[in-house]
Image 1 (cartoon, rainbow, N blue to C red):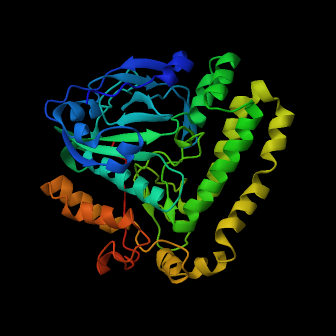
Image 2 (tube, one colour):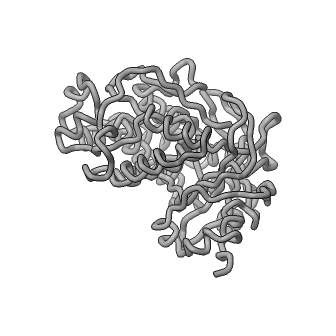
Length: 397
């Protein structure tokens, strides 16, 4: 098989928001994990992807585009962010394939090397495939590669890594915000490229998608950790798993991200933050919607939140509030998975891989959390609570 032919729909529909770019030239990239079922869904040959040519393609040898977007990061608006370490290879069968950690792009910020560390890439692969297994809308992971190089991070020099991400679309609230800094025509083009009939339809549908998504996060104790508007996908998929973690107890103050010192994106703040992000989307769309129409849509946020909360919590929220462990509670009530990527457990697996090149624990955990309702998928030690030991995650930049 030769390299697949990808379309470049994003660049064709939104040329003002796509810049041609290439990945860094990695001398000896190595495939660490390959999602063979997803590869086949995309029409890719897993055997070819494992060849030298296939690995080079996964590492970005064919080039692609870096995309522009803006965003509120921890509440502060940045008019131009863009893919500083990501490369959109193109799309295949209606799914976009993007590399994360493949090197600097024209949007890289001063001081950023554009590379990824292997640990956060392994985290993203495993957690997003767990989310897929439990039915929560998410981007997917096709592969993780070890770039063969070392990158400097908080803990010193660690192996470099790339995650190959698959998404229905990489358009986000920040994409609309960027368009709003340019022209009304570009806002309209983003609305069309994202598949919405009108700007108000976009606002209403994204609102529903995101509210239900966050309710579903809350149901399993998921803490995203960095809910900036540039990480709020218009598709309603969970995107960017950098500093994510899971709280074992239904405690609003639970936070794990090293960069969220004030707790803006703590577990219990996620409902308010998604409402705030949706309001920023409405503001960006105002030139096309008008204020009265946008306010009318936004006025439904609380009612829609209550609807999805009742749908997914079904009267167990008060019991969960006092449960010693969310997963154990869900398991006992036949409501949730037997296995989740518990924080310390996943970190130990990642540390083994980073420090010793030992992936045994990682693959054992991956097998369990991607078959999370099967009691035979993992050993007994993956089922217990970890308690309240302090835990911090790093985004890998």
